Length: 191
Image (cartoon, rainbow, N blue to C red; front, side, top):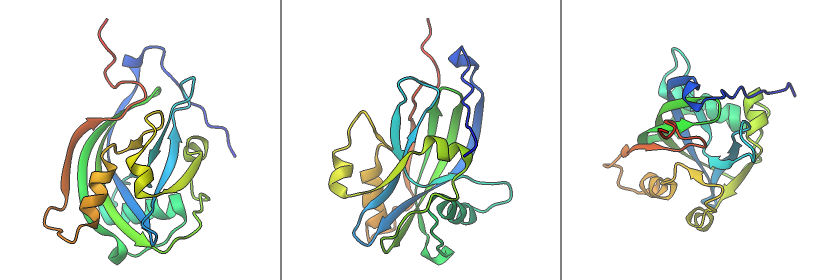
């Protein structure tokens, strides 16, 4: 595996900032478990960890659906059709402050339900190989008792799942509002 280096600015205010659209997939198996990846910020010591859904940025010229299907394939090895992608079920704007950058991300969440399968991470990027150390199929009980030392992002994942699994789709996409999920706050406190 090629080396992955995190370039951390000495002053958090000097971190580069970017804005992107991202597709996130609530991937449920036939046992009603949700797939999450354990992610990390390698620019900090000790290294913090959190759990995220599969997904990522929309490429130039890609539709939301195409990007969601591509991200799902790259991050899990699973090939699904556009017809199996349900939603969008939710939207939000989130600021992620990491040791090396600040990203404002406009997330769109989709639902896919499939039979249980063995996840393949062969399609992970060099960065994902370095930062995403494991994956786990989470039960509802596990999601309701998350260890605060390793949060699940989005923090309102249980609410989002309830909306996604409701037979009443009239509320879709639910607006999850704006929030910050950071390892280093996006705007460092004024001194």
